[in-house]
Length: 624
Image (cartoon, rainbow, N blue to C red; front, side, top):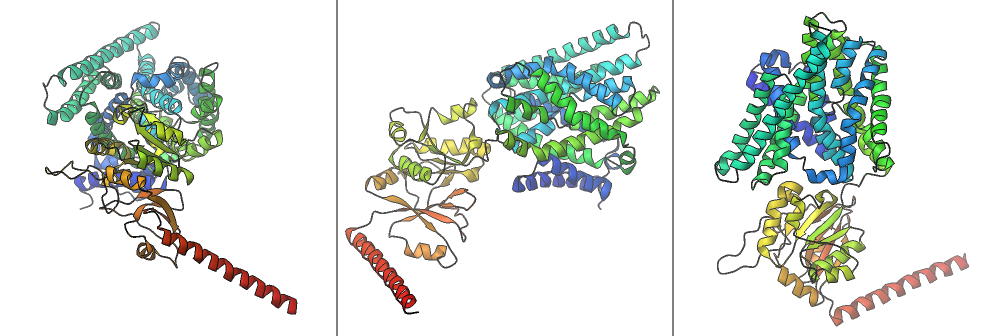
């Protein structure tokens, strides 16, 4: 049964997504874990052998997957992001690509000992970093917008450029008329690239014109878009190999910068699909390694890999960004990060086969060398990225802030209390008047419609571990949770309970705060009556059950603070797990005069007993 193609396809999906889940749980780089999982499933255990299991379907599956991944990458390239990284990206394309090409070819020739023809082709391929590896890596890091935007734009823009460089060099190497070869090949590649670019732009404009006008129903928009992407890629690729990458990238960029009512829904569909495709293709990629390919890796290739890591990439970036406005710490981080992935291996394997048919020497070294580049760069950059970012001081942490939507007395009081515990607190509201009180309390405020700010990428949600929607508009609170759930994760979103009306009220779209399901109005009334927040440590002797039994009448837990600093809100339908060492934050009624008197008397009694014990010990010591 395990030899069934259906079983193999299911295993590829399970292993790929499983590796991503483990990466999420452990904080390890997903690309490195997927690579290792594929190697274990492929050459180590022999469960998945793509060449045997997929046969002739392997190449088209990878190419179509790369096309969709590049389109999704282009769909994330909004020109607004260039306000952070425009100059750096332009320099890395105009200066970095030719310089990286030259240095990569030099390293391949003198480091790996390849002939100049093969070195020039391999050097052109190596200008690629690629969204298949940059995307998963950036997802696990919290970097300044300029750094992440620069790496994202560079990876997606350089992917088709590297492929086209390889196409041009291959054409020049195999061109029959060597005297006129350079001009002829250059014009041929330029014409095909221009046609592919026009096709991508035309498809992007066509989709963004048809969709808003209702020519395609909502339930068909995602499938139609996927088919258009694949068709555009295939048409361009038939005209000239690898030019389809230009088509899908430009189509995505056009759609990212033209208004379409369904843009966010389409982007989420493509993001989900891309995660699945990246997982599958990485498993296929690493499982396709065999012992023959690994044994072809020679010791002299190690010098090339060292030159690629510590000379080619750093020199390319530092020269490209010389005299730019990018701070030196950010330049050094960008200079270190350059993992290669699917596109590099796929293109290298394709041209290695074609060059060997022409009898070009050293082509047998391209496949093991390309796999060596992918493995070394993914492991080196994947496992060191967070450490390097911290050492350079650009790591913005895991995002432990708390975001309140709605400025009122209760959110301000809770914000002040959480700030006293060391949490960065932000209160967002569209009303300047409502934000006056949080400002007076020295809380961070954000004025504007949160949904619009996130859509326009003005607010980075990665800096917040929890969001609590507690405005006086129940419908807006539910909309916040419904819309931002896919962005942050629904487990991080909580809202105050909507008020009940004769018609039933608003349906909550997030977790409802506290078991009592108090509304925003009720919470504001209680805090104005003197209710306050307190914190209790849970221990082995004083359990959470003891805490509940000793809680003042009407009071209840609102959140739990774990030893690692993570905060979880109590919800009506989902209560966090509380264990020894956690601290429970409660919302409790004010003390009565009798309670205050009893508390003071208890403290005085404890102090008196402690003094008596101290005096007794001192007397015993004197007698001794």
